[in-house]
Length: 263
Image (cartoon, rainbow, N blue to C red; front, side, top):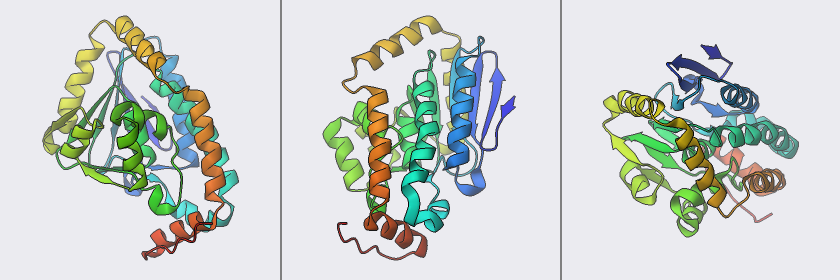
């Protein structure tokens, strides 16, 4: 088993079980997670025994995305922080999504922001019946990052993905399935077992063919992943320096309605 501060990796006969491992904090995306995710994704790519990956999360929720408690005290100088974190996170995401084996994701509770981008880039998404999947970027006065424009468009189509982000929608599991974000819905108490069974089945399959199939589908996508991720990172850095972004973070942490000014 390989562990970092925010992630845990266990092996079962070629199946890597990757767990988001900060449940008390809602499995946030922060600087530590970004560094850890790059390290773990790189390690999995170099593992000769790898045949499939199961991505899961400890605790009641998959991930709340960016950690507002970290953003709040740094809200007047977020741009360099965003550039620093996304340098690691976006490289880790590229390597993870391009894993030459099937990746199954088990999603429970809330999945928000960057957590949604992460799961949307995986091959099969299994959700518990009570799962809620949402985009909160617009509520914060932020543009989206973590590959959201690529993975959400791939799963939902451009118009539906754009509406999901602009309206800061939160979808229940059935609506998320209709929109393309979720592939399978199972009862909450069966989620982990069902996802593990599926991941084991794929790990026992023709993984070279699976990997080549994944590569061809990614190649068929219209967007160049690296260029889009860099554009997202630099755009978010610029947007995070605006008064609206600072107001959005403050309002969320202070539990009040934001007063956006368009600047």
